[in-house]
Length: 256
Image 1: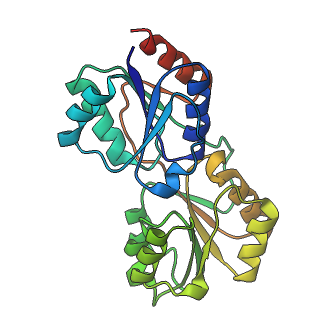
Image 2 (image 1 turned 90 degrees about the vertical axis):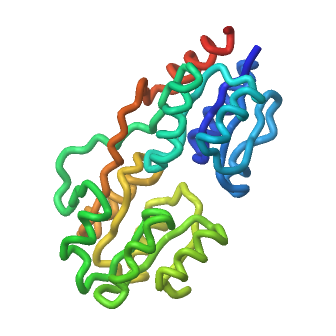
Image 3 (image 1 turned 60 degrees about the vertical axis):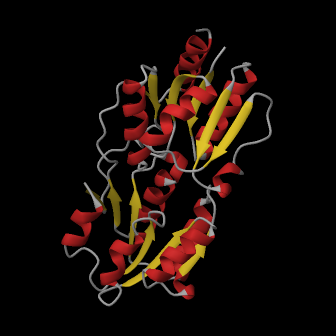
């Protein structure tokens, strides 16, 4: 009968996994951490596998799990796993669909600076002497270590030991870190910025699910510059932002 491989790690992927399982479609979700596993409820027909997959392990994984299709619902910035999944789909002749959260559609916002990458941000003079709030996850934080003496950096992270360890190693002190799991209300967002006297915010183009729309609104209200790092450019074989299309893809492959 086969099994759908859902690449997860986000709340949207958890919602998608439940919707798939409710349609009696066998699905195995892969995540990289035990904290991400907690996003997925105990639902019949839904398995969650924790760990990092490499191309060397994929053949055995796909064979053992009887994978008949790949639904890539990973985070928009998790480029590596998407590239591995695309390579696996080609190597093992498996149908692939990328489900990506919709982008925030806005007209040009005053005070919003769109940049292509973190490298472009750090190569410029955007952060100098600012009190900067980074809402970019923990992985990019080491890139900002050399800026600790040129600006006052704060970071908001998911509540995980790994995230905190990376932040401390990148030079952040405990009084400049806060751990919160989205969604974050507009009132809390604004209060945090005001409490820390933030003069600039850096975020990712992570869509409404990542709170991008709330940050844009608060930035405009408080007249605080917002730097948005664009999503990485990846050429997906097939892509959708429609949940029903993603579910139909799974249903069609599950019948194989």
